[in-house]
Length: 385
Image (cartoon, rainbow, N blue to C red; front, side):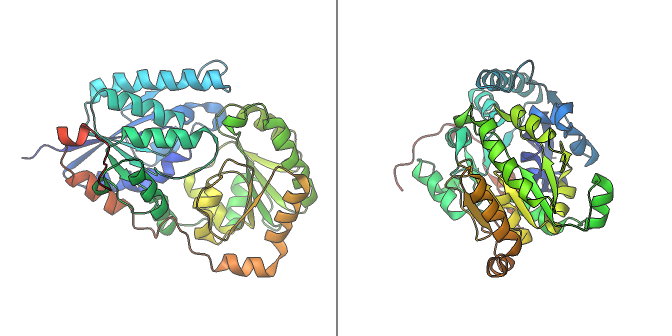
């Protein structure tokens, strides 16, 4: 009887788990594979909705929970200490779980902390969603993880090209699209009426999804930036505004405290991913700087107002309107998304550039079939491009 290949997935946020969930499901269905799971980061914070519960409710066995946040983690110093704790915790878990391959996703401090531990302990790494260009420290983390990884699953052709230009072997790069699109195409959508009853908002008014994160490379500017957005949103008090918590990046708590003061918002610390997809399906516009507005919203023909530099340079479809942190510019963009029929017609015909919903099977085929040997783990710059 052949030994099962153990694939360890590490997830740290409400954002990265949906992007890998279809892959986890596919791994579980393969008789030659065994899924291991480490949960860390904001998944374990009650004030951020304890999103680890969604993973448990989805039926996955969590092999290790690693707490990395303590004290004042909402600062550059706190982020650095959290990354260090993540590296230490992952190292201990790796020595016990002894996987054959480790699967990492996206570009968070948890991803970087994990990649450091995994690479130093000589385990091969597969990385989903490398090669993309954005603002903030996330881009540097993403490219650093690429250089520590051995198998690459970028979502788009331009991202795949960047990975090769960074010296990764072309035959280690597999552009299959984003696995989150698989979920979008398959999940049962909850109606707007049901969502309104569940989360306490009116289903009769236009719906704005609002999520604004701090930009770590602009630390200290969060309050000024969020205030411009809040002032703009006051012009749309005829809409339902569902405001989601910022993430745990430095400056995020300032944003959370600011939105809590707004009487016209329905504030939601965290929402299970299936409900969030349903919400995008019935919303009228997304506002803020979340990657969901860039990557997932096109699948719902949903307009998105992207504010500031956090998603700078990332591939986007025609549903996105980019603006700076200026009140009047934000107001004008939201009004266009809600009322400009020419723009709305373009959005209704948009095609998502991040995939067609058939990623997970292809990714797991590679995870199952790749030869895991010293030649894979011992990386070298590929000059023969």
